[in-house]
Image (cartoon, rainbow, N blue to C red; front, side, top):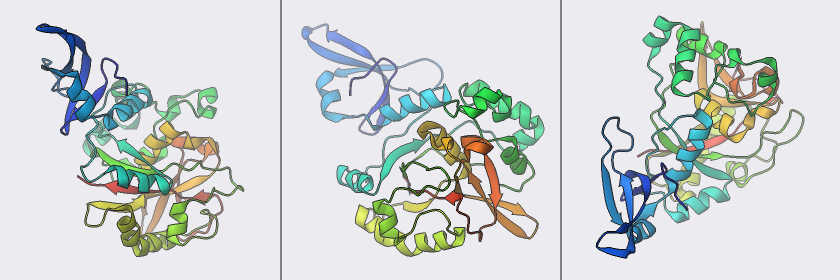
Length: 313
C-alpha cells in the first residue's frame, strides 16, 4: 500500500503515523522512513527514523485502510488498534469465504449517561458533531439531506431519548475489530442473496421473517462449530448481531440505510415488564439513523439480519 503523510500503520503491533521518506544523510542512495511514534497522543510529536526495507518487510497496513475510512465517515482521526495476532491470512480467507469483511469499530468520545442527562439530547449531539463533524444529528438534516443516504447521520432522538431514560443501555464502544457480513440489504419484498454463512447456520429460507430468539438460539447452537472452521477455537471471539450504534456507524460507511428493510440488532429496549429489540436501517424512517422497537417474537418480512464475528484482544 502506498502511504500518504498522515496515514497510520503498525510495526510489531506498535501504531505509527507516516510522516514521509527521506534520504539517509550518510548514504543518500538509501531511503528512510520518518514516522510519529505517539500518533494518538496529544502534545509534542515524537518521531522515529528507520530503513524503508523494514517498512516493506514488517509493516502492517490493516489499520491504514480503516483509519482512512473512518476519517471520511466521521471527519476526524480515530485510533485503530492493530489486528489481533491470531487473525492470520488463513483466518482472513475463511472469513471472506463466509461473506464477512474485517472492520474496526472505533472507540468514540461519547462520555457517559450523566453527561447526556446533564446536557440534554440536542446539546449532547451537537457537541458530538463538533468532535466528529461528518456524524450529523439526524434531526438537524434538511428534508433533502434526510432522503440522501450518502449524508452521514447519527442515530435519531428516539434512540438517545431511550438511552437518557434508562430504557436502552448507554452505548459502549471499546474499540475492537470484528468481521461483519457486508451483504447488501435489499428492499422490502426482495430476498437477501444467499451466503455461505447462512448455509453454515442451516438457514435455507430468506433471512427476513425470523424471530429474534430463534436466531439467538441458532447462533448459540452453531457458533462453536463455525468459529472452529474459521480457525478461532479457543480464541476470544463471538458471533452476535451488531449493537444499535455499531450498526449506525457501519451502516453509514457501507450504505446499508438506502433500502426500506429493518435489521435486528443486539440492543434491548426495556419497557415495563416487557423487552423489545431495537431494529434499524429502514430508509423511510431515517436509514442509518432510523430506529424502531420491535417485539422479539414478531415474524416480520420487513426485518432481516446480519451477523458479526466479534474479535477480542
